[in-house]
Image 1 (cartoon, one colour):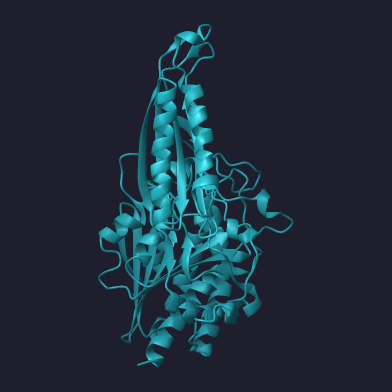
Image 2 (image 1 turned 45 degrees about the vertical axis):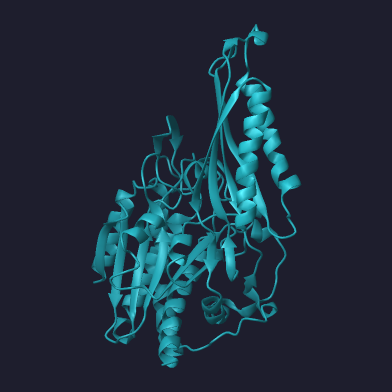
Length: 450
């Protein structure tokens, strides 16, 4: 999730609230199954043994969160751990990213496993012993810093997977690349970052990656449940900024003004008709959300300018084009009708996350064997966004969610991107094993077809 949109819009994984489907409904998908049960049992034993360390890592990272492109201590912690395991390590990839390369003694495919590292500009509520008290200046405002989306868990799980996979290195018939990515939530203004930058700097090369797997914890889904979808999984993500310029006046003389607040409010309401009145929603979902509206600094002054920012989510290029056009038309003409002007800026942040159909079919049985077929759930596409999409544009990819609903909590009580976000640490062990099993099963299947 990106840039301005990431700052202001909560990441509600809507698919956890939608109906469940069974994998058998995907009649066009024909799964391939091959595994080494002895090797997987070894890895599971090690994964169980390191779970306490994974929890400790997660809590430490949670207590000391860092924003995108500023993950210096997190990167150092990761690099030191990988180096202690004897893994080849590259640092400062995509600014603060860390890449580990584990080569087995036998030739085979290169499997990449990815975790994101950055936190959000959110002040944490709650009273956990590892609550974040970090504060910073962000976009001119003082704010707390919090891992409110689970990236601390993603890092800890991949660190645990690295330790488990190193233990079976002598049996590894291929190479595993561990990608610890900064800045998934979007770079600071004027900077580059995230998966897009890492890809451009060659993270999928030397050695060249054959497939990539990624996972995201889901605080609204029960622990032990894994949700997935082949094809489009997360929406394309654009951000927009509308600057309304009017005429300033004393608040006691509004007739002397061209009020940008009133004009902006009318534009905001007009934007809400785009999805409901201009789009064929029976074909694909779409979202237009205004996440922040800022104007003025005093109660008795009508300001000269008002600014709103927001996010657009789409699964269809034609609908995306329509939304862009309608935002420009609504803002421009409403402003003109009030004697004001409106400047509209729209930028594309992330493409749609697209899971390879063949790779999904190939690897879903691995997840079913791990947590049980009834706990691997096909879900509708979600309107969240993820820069994992940039990897999926280059190599076959499979991205999925691991349930982490805290016991006694309801999904809406622990939403991602909110001060009240929480997760069940019991999900960490599941996450470690999913990464290990997917990597090892893919390698095994690769050799079984040769």
